[in-house]
Image 1 (spheres, helix red, strand yellow):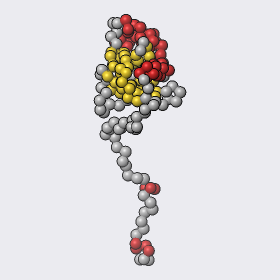
Image 2 (cartoon, rainbow, N blue to C red):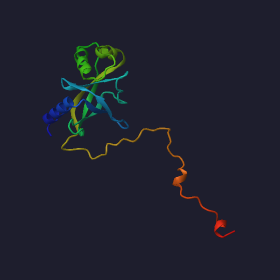
Image 3 (cartoon, rainbow, N blue to C red):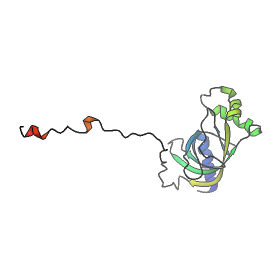
Image 4 (cartoon, rainbow, N blue to C red):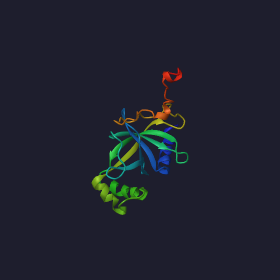
Length: 176
């Protein structure tokens, strides 16, 4: 696919789907689902506070996986530049009403932008044009992440009824 087709596909997928997966660049990072809006050629997400947590290691670049709205399958994965939007800019005042309109079940309604200003971060993810995966050329890896380390254990002795019948003593068979 050429660059204009990719750009159109990114825009269409981001406009139609309210959810995408974001993973920080580098090894060992896990993709995380985030609700988002598409505005003026970029993706905007709100993280922190009582909102969704930011993916671990999110810095200046990230991988963004967009899904199909119809089938909810992985459509394409792109690289994006990540920048925090400063709350004192015109961009903040332009984007936050759009984010409020898209956000479901806000605990504080129209006062959310003030809460976001104090305890959250609004990120702008602008596509770089680098494409990792397209519908024409999907990746062949499983995309499965290793489970996170945990001290929990699940190994316990099997219940008595799974061990089989208890052995009888040999003295019983010999008639002793």
